Image 1 (cartoon, rainbow, N blue to C red):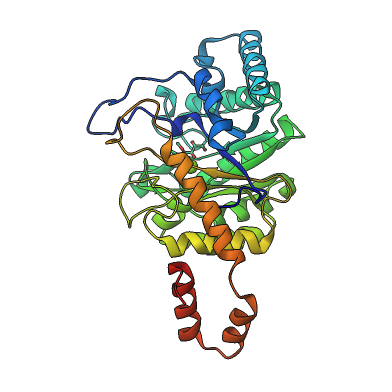
Image 2: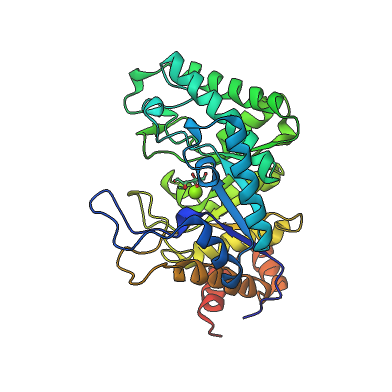
Length: 347
Ligand code: 3MF
Ligand code: MG
């Protein structure tokens, strides 16, 4: 497998996990974030994705000076390991104040908390030397439709995006859509909603999307078509490649683990658009199996990266002229058989 393919890879510290799930506790000893940084480069990754409290644990109880000093320390640690921060995301789903959502909560004081936390997240990102803020709008949605005024909720989300653009005129906002979980229905379920919000904002060039394969599948959509839509608007800032076996809880399976052909098509769409040439990362939001022994468990990251690169090679070995001819002749039976045999490595 060729490592000369110029892609940059990233993941977040949460992707090296201890294996807890809603039905059982950790099965592996905790592994400190600081020690995780040393694992990135040997695994072939250089980008680190953060939540605000991955950078500054306990930030809610800190003074701005304490917060920024800790962020500065993390910046130095990253530099020492040859790593770059890809983005920082406000964790707006854990605190008591975010039980009913953050920007769309029915409580005014909880919405105030969410905005203050967002400002802190931006300050932390800047102190880390990073200009990208990811909004995974976890609890912005409802369990029952009558709980919130959905039209007002969209206005509140847009109002927050505009306030963020004004608060710091250099940041970009990357929205990571997801249709459900933890809510029953989320307010920004697809990349179409994301792109609409971007264009409605005060500076659409600074509002983009991050597409996670599993989230698109949970919305009943094809991840490669979602990516193509974002790319057509030049709004694909990052990806969370992984996989999902049907409509169930968010699985974060290894890339290609459930549907290798769908994974191939995501790679194809990214390659065709030249994704990555402006420094965009291939993020892998994959979860280690709970059954896996040892600590820390990182094989899922290594394997998902490898599968991605193998699929890049598969794409590059495709006979483009043959594909063009099959399309022109509208012989999709022949095209499908060619693709399947190509993926299987048989003539
Ligand atoms: C939820 C996710 C999240 C986001 C992360 C960064 C834990 O389904 O995918 O991962 O990716 O919060 O935005
Ligand atoms: Mg994700």
